[in-house]
Image 1 (tube, rainbow, N blue to C red):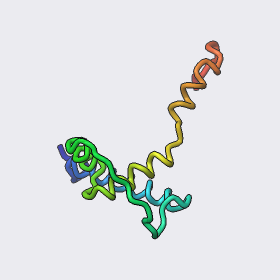
Image 2 (tube, rainbow, N blue to C red):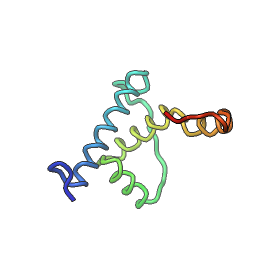
Image 3 (cartoon, helix red, strand yellow):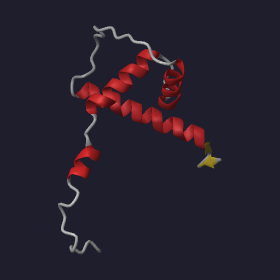
Image 4 (cartoon, one colour):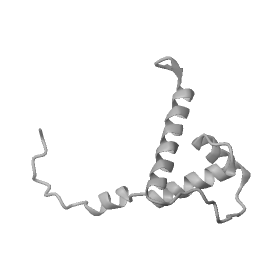
Length: 98
């Protein structure tokens, strides 16, 4: 399937790479990322999970994946939870038609 001269896979990759760039840029802006990488993190995970996550994020190294995943988690805004908490706060009889 072609999307404006690109395949769907190429478009998905471009979107993922741009999203990754923006996440890391925001993490740098709030001081979560800097020049020094002064902590080592290790753990055991299933190889399939690691490869699937790298493929989805369009990264090639474990370090890139960890940095991106941790930045996303640290920057998460909890929008979904806040939205659910608001359930019932707007009266059911209000007219939302524009």
